Length: 179
Image (cartoon, rainbow, N blue to C red):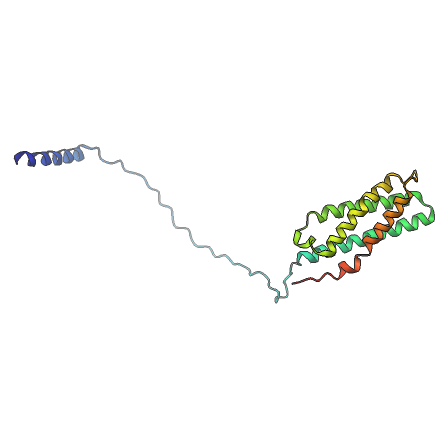
């Protein structure tokens, strides 16, 4: 029994000795910063539809419809310029108007490709895009062979295809806008 008491006493003695002989802990320097003072921030509420300063963002379909109608107006102006210039025999003005139409069609197709599918899946917009795609190669071919006159039939087809595009104006004008 004597031995069972000595071992724990030895262990306890070693623990006490190691604590007393251990180096004192090094003091740590702690810098205290003052608490941040609360700042008052005034938040202006978002304008609502009822407030007079509200500027509602139009739905995507409204933006697309407006854009398409503006493009159709520009295309109509250029189609009128082609007719007028060719009636007057002004070859250069006719050529420039055909170039302008081709640029408008290409730009419009590029723009339509960047619009959300929810908008471009509207049937009349799909038809509009299809008609632009039908015109595009004819317009390019007409422009390529404008001076040599070898593609007269293609020029007529291009004119007919452009007339088909322009006929979509009333259908696009009445696209219903849901709030």
